[in-house]
Length: 188
Ligand SMILES: CC(C)(COP(=O)(O)OP(=O)(O)OC[C@H]1O[C@@H](n2cnc3c(N)ncnc32)[C@H](O)[C@@H]1OP(=O)(O)O)[C@@H](O)C(=O)NCCC(=O)NCCS
Image (tube, rainbow, N blue to C red; front, side):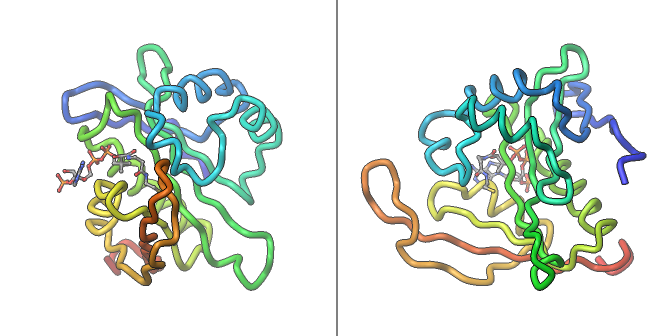
């Protein structure tokens, strides 16, 4: 499944970047990456992997059948600048679904890295036999992600009104977007 990795891409400004699966040796670099995500965004992360203890446990027990993590690293110094994860449930009835989470280092946004990572994730999902990708976005906070997802044919499936609490105790809608995975690229 990972024969094509590491895969070289180029950011808009010409920085050479590699996309590859996460490995155990990335623990420190991944912790450093999450520490660069601003506090107001970390608040909305679904899992608290900004916590070094939780990160250690998670990375020590990597199980690609449950969570498939890809990272984008700067080719020159191996700094992690983006992370995307595909989460799957073990139950048979949900094994055709994967939930997608993506974060790009703020210093490297608007460089097409998020779009490359999403595209690669869709390709991997195709090879894994996943039929539906689901992504959840907090309204008014994750607009860039909604925009990038729409471009890749995710559509809005549902909105859970006042579902998420922000740091000030205010409620925000949760937008659930879905992408049906086709069997071949020509179906796009
Ligand atoms: C969403 C995110 C991953 C996008 O990564 P990125 O590398 O900056 O994205 P790209 O450069 O590939 O841009 C993707 C598209 O979004 C657009 N975009 C970027 N920032 C935007 C913003 N603030 N509002 C609207 N659109 C925006 C870009 O213009 C681009 O569209 P285009 O191709 O039509 O120009 C990144 O902004 C991020 O990590 N956000 C915080 C975490 C998050 O919201 N995660 C989603 C929860 S799963």
